[in-house]
Every structure is written in structure tokens, then in C-alpha cells.
Amino acid sequence: MAKMLSSSWLKHRDDETRRDNLYHGLAKMILDLAKVPLHRIGAWTNDRDGRLSLANGPLSDFTLFWNRHAISTSIRRDTTYASTELYIHDMLHYQDCRMRDQLNSIVGVNQSNIFVDEDWNITSIIDLEFASVVPVQMVQVPHWLTGRGVDQLDGDDLEEYKRRYDEFVNIVEREECTMSRDSSYSRRL
View 1 (cartoon, helix red, strand yellow):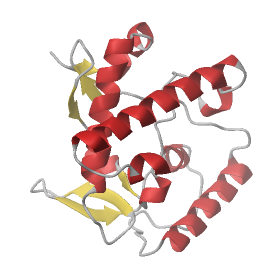
View 2 (cartoon, rainbow, N blue to C red):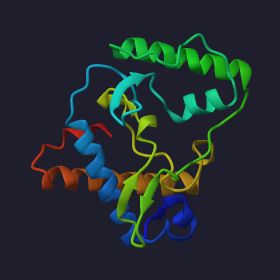
View 3 (tube, rainbow, N blue to C red):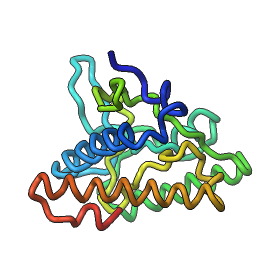
View 4 (cartoon, rainbow, N blue to C red):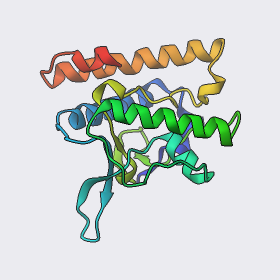
């Protein structure tokens, strides 16, 4: 029976076998999604018939945080981008608004939209409509690999994150080989 990853994260995040299963599943999804060329930078939306379309502004942990805390910006929710430059410009604008309205605020970690079996094989992902479509250069290794917030990555915690980061990138590279793809994607991470 599948459960939210977040429900077993603290208990099993140091289990190498489970982590390996999770990382392989995430790597496969990232690489499969990277194969599909998209014409806009944005986020998926579901219409009433269940069809996905790329018709919403890109969502990230930061934009979700800004929306939740009513940080005002002049960027419309349905804004999508035809170029990386325009997207980066608005991301910097978001950051300016956050610094003005929510000094020293930071986003927590969240693994609740990934469902896994007992061995942490990914069984499903929910809330796909919140997945951002961004330029491949902006795809990053998940920041929650150690269960620490970005503002907590210092000293030993930073070293632990680096080990998990390297472990994840190595798995992405192995998956690229399995899929007979070059390692250009893992080299970008």
C-alpha cells in the first residue's frame, strides 16, 4: 500500500536501499520529462475534463510560499514565459517582493506529493499541476534530500547534503546509461 513519502521520511531517510530506490524513481521521472520539448516556461493545469495544459505561471517552493503569505507582486497567476530571460526577471522580482514583505522567511521541506511503497519505490505523484516547466538549466537536485531546510545546510549538515547530492547525480547518470542517453543531463545538475 502506497503512503506519502513524508510519512516515513524521518524514520527511513538514512536507509541506503530505500534511498536508492527513491533516487532511481526520481531520476527516471526527471529524465523522461526532460525528453519532452515544451514551448513555454510555466506550470501544468488540469481542465474540467482532466486534460493537462501548460497554461499557468511556473510554480516553485518560493512562489507557493509567496502566494500562501499573500506577498504582493504584479505578476499574474496565468503568466507563462517564452524565454528564460523573462522568467528570470520575474523570479528576481518575486525575490524583491519577498525581501520587502517577509524579511528572513524561508520555505520548509515537503515530500508529501510523492507516494512510495514500503521499500520507497515510487508508486505515484500527486499535484502534477503544481510541477513547474522550466529550462533544463534550472532543474535542480531536490533540496530536501537530507530533511534539512536550505537555511540549515551548514557544517556537517552541508557535508551530508553534498554526499546525498552526489549520490543522486550518480544515479541520474546510471539511469542515463540504462536509457542509452548521453550524460549531458546529469552533468548539468
